[in-house]
Image (cartoon, rainbow, N blue to C red; front, side, top):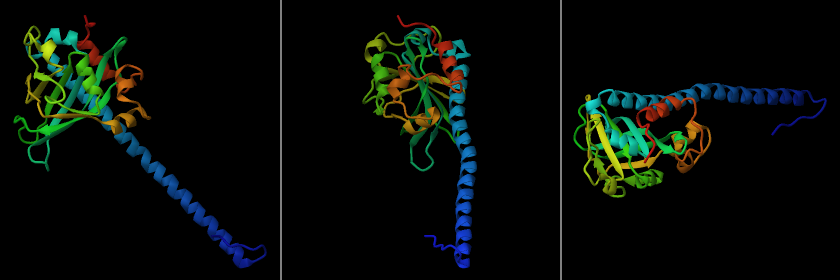
Length: 248
């Protein structure tokens, strides 16, 4: 509390000291803001980098026709998720952890992306410190609904299968009826279908809200109600390039 009485020399001194304290508070606030701006930029840069890494994974996978996702699945996909560099946890024995992005097909193209986490038990192809890229494709509306869940476990809450490889390869005849998701991995350049049973997929609301600057539901984003931002366009355009066919 500031005490001051007119004509009191000591009061004038207190008044000056009070002003100095207010000035110090203002300087502290300004400094905090200035320091926060680079941190904000770095956090946004990390998310953009994640999208760019996901785009690069797709480009590299689809560059080899005999080792890419089959055309029949490209045509049927309702959603595409990419987790670049899934890593084995350093502190949780046998656990895998990764973050990626998902976009879904809408009536006017592919949606703006949302961010997801994947974590679960080891499936044995993580070696050393190198990460494994994962691709997750929803092949029907059930798969789309799975991705609208806040969290689900592959194999338990969502029927999934290892995806086939090769432009003209065919999945098993009953994949359309029995599978909601098809999954692949790429480790040390080898791209193959992989069984991800037991791996949990969860929505990363914090990163998604931060990326768009305000909260949006995953459903509104994946249904195409939120515009694709300039930072997300390279990833979304890459998905559209390969998963280009309109669903039958």
